[in-house]
Image (cartoon, rainbow over all chains, first blue to last red; front, side, top):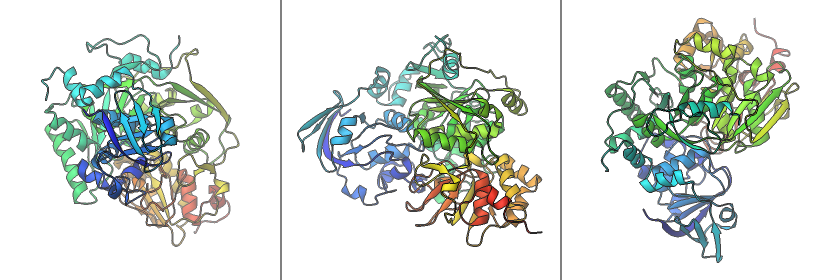
Length: 169
Length: 434
């Protein structure tokens, strides 16, 4: 699993909900690539056109609130974004991201100081976020050990395979 | 140290790794594997879970009796893609011989359906792949919403990982005014604490006002715990809960109660005696005010239904206002009984006739307009008052279509007046047609 990402920051505000991330009219598909084409379309239909592979999403508090649709983290991944940095995450979005392997980092400081378009680098192993545009470094909250085990297994289903003692895939 | 009702239920379901033993005591912050009594998926979330199981080569579910698959969101199919999605679930349900599989002729919106059929009982752990799965908490159940991969893991193993949530206690004192009910209490609560005011926490609703509420009104409250960021919204089971459950199932249940010395991260007490019906203004469920502050706001559409307020009591209170009256010219009223059984009951009681004569559009059960799916999607600039649970930008259609949330009585009064209206202003001031 890749643990280092560098890209342009795309900044959003507080309480970005899942209808904003992927509107319900696209819930008729389960294909991440197709979902990626509509990422953030609820508010900004031009967004996907501005994303380059590896870019980083930055948001305020309670990111991903609302519905339980896993289509939301899938669409973020499908659009080519590498990870999401936010002040805090809504609970189901948080679980879904861990479960599908979308890296997320909780950092109130980074969330406040990073501006749209900044050149940002994220190291998942240390949780350190570097802002190359502003020459600043921020730390993020480490995941509890239990969650790290899921992430290190390669997501929830790989973890489940291990638990069920099924041969690896 | 004492335990909350949430901690007790989770302790009773905790696995020790060998798959059997329960734990005497757990507390907020502990990570657990818990045994799940019922797992639920719908036509939006189950297809991804099924795809995930198939991709992992896991082709047998843990227990075909403990999985509920409910087609609800885009039912009857709104287009070719949603028909194909429903088909994935139908095929899987057939193949795995899922006992609790519900389609358009016998089901409805899952959170109205499962309690109605007695598939969830006090003391259970219920995990649903839909955010409003917190609804069942109203019956003294630990229940919460998850995504599709979590559902896939539970369908394979019957277990779910969780962090025991901190609990936040809400105590409601006083006596409710006429027209004020569970919806108003929960909108008020979200308005006070914000859309992340209970983030990751178990919300525990209690006090004499909660005990005075019907089971259906309690279901409405627990339903919206997620709109405050809550992991769950739980209410201790009482005599009303037992009567409700016993009339629906013979399954044994267990009533848990919080210890007097249980630990709460926060306790909030309100006297709600003088509360008027509450409205969440666009575009956050926490943007709440009393109805008098937005009275007169013109609407284009009113939606009565959803897992929040599409139950028989909701239809009765709306029908009582609509009887002998008509929806204002230029306003569309959409009524969707939340389940097939509620639809039939409403037909038996003559409620559907009242709605139809009032010039409402009445549909078979679906989540439909609540999530901007179908059956009443809003165009740019259209204003809707809805009895559902969310009003984020774009929730019911175009991102610039403002949505107000309210209780069913306010919805009916608003449909008649054509603008947001206190039910008294319709009932007391405008006469019925003979």
